[in-house]
Image 1 (tube, rainbow, N blue to C red):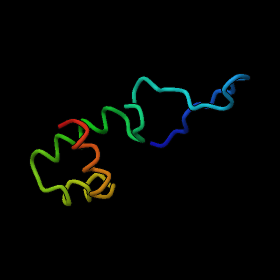
Image 2 (image 1 turned 90 degrees about the vertical axis):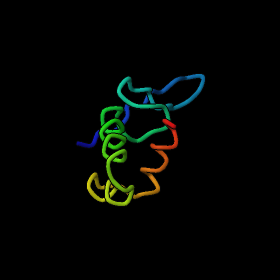
Image 3 (image 1 turned 90 degrees about the horizontal axis):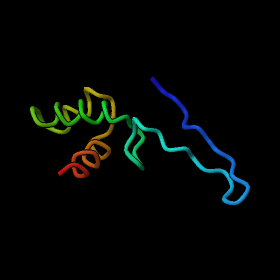
Image 4 (image 1 turned 180 degrees about the horizontal axis):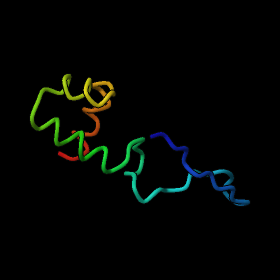
Length: 68
């Protein structure tokens, strides 16, 4: 599933992206997706996990390193 973040127009600060309660700030993934990715990464190599969940190994490493 893909969804665009809500954009909020503020007269003082301009257009900003609204924070979503189901995402980590700065991440393009939901917390539930990150949890699933970490669970798989614990059990198998990063390249295999990245292939299964459909992202690059570089993006998966960023998730892993955030939660270390």
